Amino acid sequence: MHGPFRLGKQYGAKRLTRKSTDWRGLRQRHQAKKQARKQQRRGQLRGRLRRLQAELAAGSSRRVARRGGARRARVSELVTLAVSEAGVYRVSHQALLAAGIDLSGTKLPRLVLQNRGQVVPMRVVGQGKKSRRFGPGSYIEFVGSGRDSLYSNTNVYTLGLARRTPGSRVVEDDSVAQGTPARFYLETLTVERERQYSYLAPNGDPWFSDLLLAWNAPASIEFEVMLDQPLAGAAPVSVAVDLWGVTDMPEAPDHHVVMSWNGVPLAEDQFDGRLARSLRADTDGLLAGSNRLALALPLDGGGFIDAVAVDAYRVSYPRRFVARDGALQFTAAAPAFRVTGLPSDQVVVYRVTDSEVMQLTNLSLEDLGGEWAVQFAGSSQPATYHVAAAQALKTPALALAPEREDITGGHAEYLIIAHPDFLTPELQ
Image (tube, rainbow, N blue to C red; front, side, top):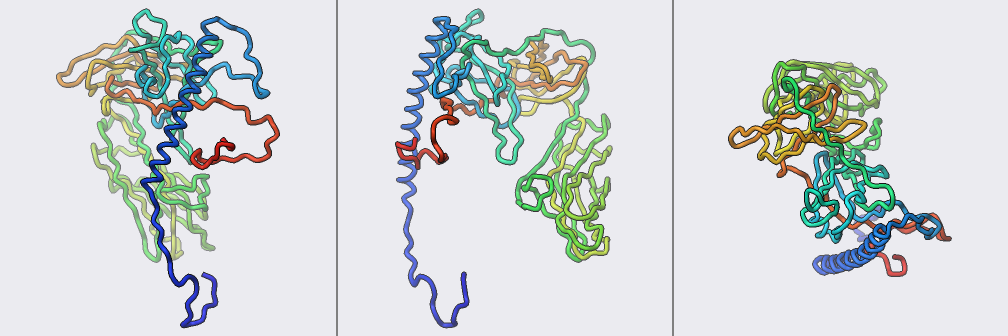
């Protein structure tokens, strides 16, 4: 690596000794430590839960004494629920038991769901129709969503017990569907493959999908776009591509990009340097199944090179109200909606607006022979609807919630963040 070197002379180690790694032993030790930590946390959590249940049962309204210079939270977090996509999630009493959480006997109003410090409305079902306590056969249900960040798509919710204020609940709406159901909604398919990395990205996101490079000759790239249940002619199809310029040459403009849809040119753009751009156009061309989106660099600007990074593309098209894998999520405004393609008559429907989450309870179900349809009331303002058969309800990843600690006090001057396998007892 570091010269100069003389010909005919050997540098560096004369013999390399290869040492094998005991991966099986490492995994066994890791699993043993992980299980020990889990058992320890379960014991600590059981103690926290017993103390909290005792406080709530005694009806204590006193303020909890300060500990470590900070007042304990009004909600004691017991379990985390990791969610990576939008949908209706259900967590049963049995699932909580498997995660080490026994909420048997807990008063239903005390259960609180939070996300990033905000209370989230949820539906809580007790042991029986009139039961106000959690136990066998009970479950919670909520509308969850993932996160859109550079680092993760996982959104973490927490389930806990309130010390004072009861948790928020989903509002029930028993409105009857009026009028003719809407024929379609606008579905937006977004494809953003994070396959390549560049620190030159001007849009704040260094990950992108493809590099399109024209070197002394024109170049193009094509994407297959699969669209299901389209309703041709009902509304224009909107096609958009996000990209940014890579090359920055003295000649201007550096880039000339042409976007085509199913072989028909839709839009083009000419720009200079490392700029983020978006090409967008509407079209009537819509095929069920495979469609073709193409980008071309004609290389007609006088330069010998043109390079752009393709970040993502989006296609919005009119789609029928047909469930996918037993569920459907859509945003629309209409007096009524009718969703087909459901595998059973056990269906839940939620309407989500900026101000509240509502469960629609007046559902009209129809047996179509092998599948079911559900009709329900809509609204005059756009809202997001979540329709799911019981088989399609999602389950979050459950884990014991760590007890919050105040690290702003004391006299520490050095903070170590490490995997618990590498921490000695005195550092834990």
